[in-house]
Image: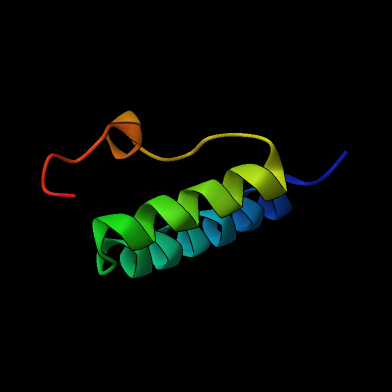
Length: 60
């Protein structure tokens, strides 16, 4: 079993990476975000984006 310190370090690294990719995605257009989330879903098998991104945009 891993030590508490190793577990805390793993959580910290996870949170840092989570913040980094979310910051990048926040700067993308809605279309780019949708493409990103679809690529993640294809690679990981799970949807991490907002359901609203899947809805048709009346401006399209």
